[in-house]
Image (cartoon, rainbow, N blue to C red; front, side):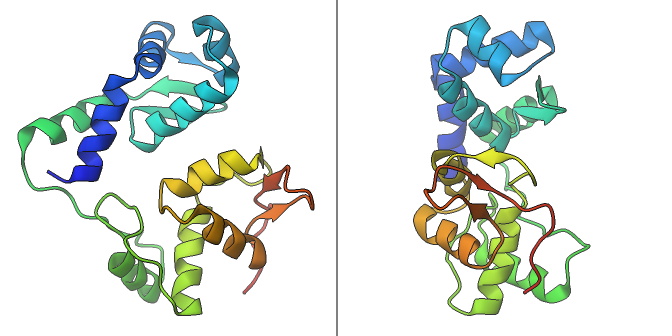
Length: 188
């Protein structure tokens, strides 16, 4: 069993706030971050972080700013942890170029996290484009939220954030208080 995936599973089921969120979504069917935070008497930022993690591991999904429990994701996560069968490997999207698919296969773990950052600028661009897909165009993020999203992929949040800013994939206010993905990607 892959250690990172087991850790995700244990983290998901061991935190009382996450269990409360899962319970609330079981009875309510859907809710916004604000509704969940208010109903469960949790800080908004904590609720955001818990939902981001639960979405990352496939337990919840987001539709029109509403969070919905993903029963298939819960079942699949539990099954993978207890069956002890071989894991699926990461499979890049077929609509990517052959070069991009090769880079992603070479540099991503089976859980879609980055095992190693490439030194070559062209390969790094493929990895940055891959991370960029986790950001919604037009949504304003704090630096902490950007770091949380990037950390899903790799520990070097500051370096990857800087690379994304330098290449125009993310933009930010000069004081660093707000980050956003532009509506259209800058041409490389």
